[in-house]
Length: 143
Picture 1 (cartoon, helix red, strand yellow):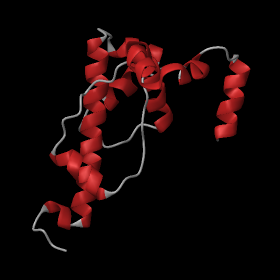
Picture 2: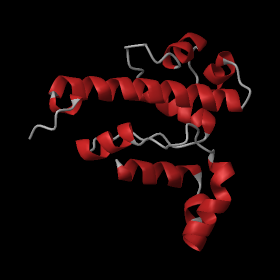
Picture 3: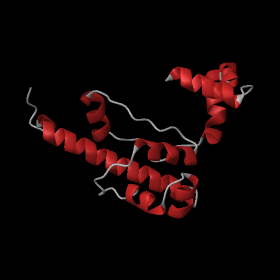
Picture 4: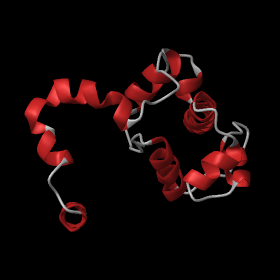
């Protein structure tokens, strides 16, 4: 099916996807870092990486992707989730064209009241009363 758009050409779709991800990751990391008044060195220390790595990640023109483990460490520093998933083009194109996403992610602590309201008492067993070894065992089982 031809629609007469850049999405008709496979290479252009994939380039748009890569560019969009570079820009969004760079924008989110920088926006969230600045919202906490952290320097790149502050974030690097909290994420157990270097300020050079943070600087590169915050550059939307950088073409070398950070390792997912680095992005997970950055998410940990911000105490927010990091999502990486495959999805159909229909979802991606809709997001590219109609992106109204917020460029920051609230920490777990900032969202606790919202989560508690949404999940009620079913959230509590996930958060309290477990030892670290029980949590590690559950993570191992999930893998």
